[in-house]
Length: 249
Image (cartoon, rainbow, N blue to C red):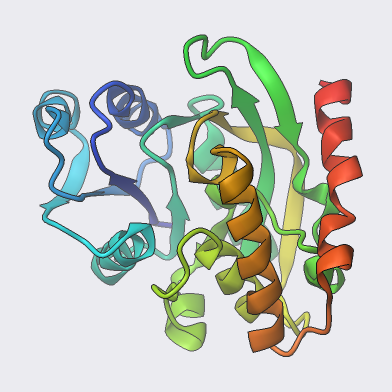
């Protein structure tokens, strides 16, 4: 099974080497790594060229936001399964993609996802919180739940059937895609109860209260546009459970 991993980057010179090395270290034999850079100005391209010996395709040009960049990667991907790894994230160990491939192939899955561990931006060895994707199921989309996106692996044919990311979303385009694909509960999927990805804090979805406000507005909009009845209080009700992720960690 061929797996395509897409990394989108913009001015990520400080972190992208770890991401590239994490993908290169994967023991799975058939990995296609696509890097889409948004015309960075901080030396990101030089880092990619130095550490990207296993990068299959590199695109560096201006884009219209993160979801436009992700769509560029999707159009280039040729794998049976596609995953995304952000330019400041790493896989938990070198066998993650091999386990993903084995599980998806053996069980004939459309989708597989696991947990993500948030780590300190300046101390990647320090875990802060565990995003437990086990809480997600299609019936909970109305409450704003989704799997941790970097741990979500989807068959390429799903993008052909349901379409790509919507670029009119600024921060919740991944949630909208999950709502579009999983609403109706027709996909065969499984959650694996282990950390697949370690994510540095400070990304767009963890960037302060303004981003949180925008995120929840867009989650509400995504539900409504996909025919999922919900309300803002219902979506906000997930936050006490999210606080427990810090305590349990």
